[in-house]
Each structure stands twice: as C-alpha cells, then as structure tokens.
Length: 363
Image (cartoon, rainbow, N blue to C red; front, top):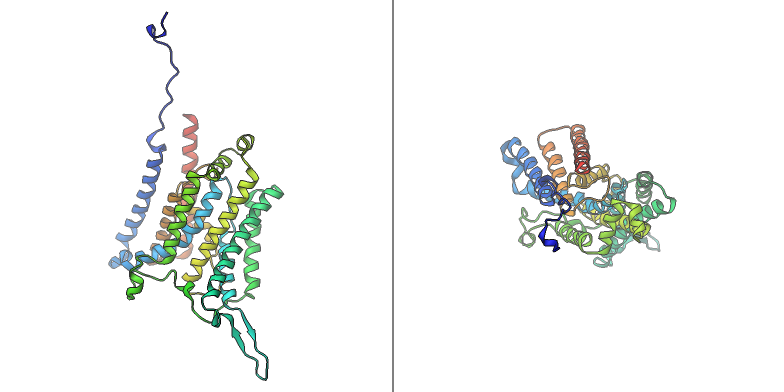
C-alpha cells in the first residue's frame, strides 16, 4: 500500500517560541526601556536641561566608558562567569597612562633638573602610554582567567580577590596619590565634546573619538560572537560547560581568552576614563564601576546563568545606567539613592530573567 494513501501520524510540530521569547522582541523591549527612562527625565528635569545638545553628548561620553567595559563583561557573562575587578583594571590602566607620560630623569651638574621624556618624544610617548595601559589590562584579564582555570576556583572569588590586588597595584604605582602628567596630550582630548564644541576642527567628527572607538569595538565584539568559532565556543561553555567539553570545546582555553578580552576592553575603557577625568592618573577612579558594568549587561539581556547576552543589548544597558545616573544628579537625587535604584534594577532584571527561564522550561 502506498504510504500516501493513509495519513501517517506525524510527530507534533514543535511549538513556536512565544513572541516575548523572540530576539527582536527582546531588543525592542530594551529600546523601549531606554526611551522610557529618557522621557522620564526629559519631562521631569526643569527647563529642558536634560535634552540639551551638551547634556546628550555628556550622556554619550560617560556611557562610552561603561559600554566599552561592558563589551568584555558581556563575553564573560555569556560564558557563565563574572568579573568584579573591572573597575580596578580601569583604574590601573588610568594610572599606567599617567605614569608613562610622567617619566623623567634628572640631569647632573651643579643644579639638578628634572627632564620629562614627553618633551623629547611628544608623539611617541603617548602612543607608548596607550600600549602599556592596554597591555596592563590584557595581562590583568589573563591573570584572572588563568587563576580561574588553573586553580579551579569560581570566578566570583577570583575576581573579588583580584579587585583588591589590581586596585592596590594602581595605588602602589601612583604612590597613593594622583599623578599629574607635565603636558596635555591627544589622549586627554579623545572624550572632549565635539557637537557642542565651538571649534570647527572638532565638530566635523560628529562624535568624540572615544565614542568612535566604542562603536568600532562593539562591531568587532558582535562579529566575534556571531561569526567566529570562538563566539560559538563562548555560548557553548555558558550554556552547558560539561556538554561543551564532551563536544570537544577547549573550555579552559576559551575561559582564559574571554577574561583576557575582558581585560582588553577594560584597558580601552581606562583610556576613555583617563580623558574623561582630564588626564589625571587617579588610582581611586572607577570605584563601583563593576556595579554599573554588570548592570548594563544584565539590563541588556545578559543572563547571569550564562549562555545569553548581546553586544547591542549591553550598549543599550550602559545608556540606561548613564541616563539614570545623570538624570538623578540633575533632579537632585542623593548618591546613595541612585545606587539603591541601580541595585534594585539589577535584582529586578535578574528576577525577570529567572521567571523567563522557568516559563521556557515549562514549555
């Protein structure tokens, strides 16, 4: 008998995911949250000060620091890790830039004088300072990854310890005081306003160079996650580490690479932070930035359970955090209240993520 003459019992079709589980809906919901938070402060801050060109540019400049560090944190959280040392790595990179720019030697003779290397190499030394700072971030991230893999410790414990180590190292290099480079360089200007600047030579760039660095870095990170084998390995490790290992994924190497990349992006964020604080090597800068960076990733859809997250979502999350922070300041909110609001948002975002996972598990 022909098989087509009788209807065969086919397996039940796999149910389509609910609309709220789809990727486009998640992205739109993040944009909606961003617009909602912006409109909230735009309506409540007096005299329209919140949506002036200068304030909008300030939001972009400040969020670039959080968002750049959040690129690396996104990779870490997708791989089911956490990095509490990101603020300390940013501070270490800031200090390293100032330390290199402040290099000098003493002349001999009857009257000792200090001669700064920046006076002899005004182009080369700033480039060297950037390379040293980013290398310090990469090395710090690599140390985190190697300790997690080599010692088989949970990332929370390792990065909690390294948070103090890197912050202490920054203070030690700076001699527990701020470092003031003798001359201003192009590094100090990469976060200067452009659209609201009176200098035509800056307005043509449309956005500060630091924001362009963020955009290029975000595109590169998104391409890495979407189109490379490493990106697939990162998602696999975060989804189920044991299954990934059985499938031949080099779990240990992937984790080390992920934390190394997190250190690299923290180094870039340190470069922006150095410019944002007017070119001062401040070892106490970026305190509590790990809270803002983790919040940006979680708000952007990253799951602390691992296996989920997006670069675009994390950038949106960084904008939300910055708008909350700057809008709260302009409305006169106390700093302690702003921190409470951000903490509550983290708890709420994680709670919603847990509810969503339970519903998916139930089908």
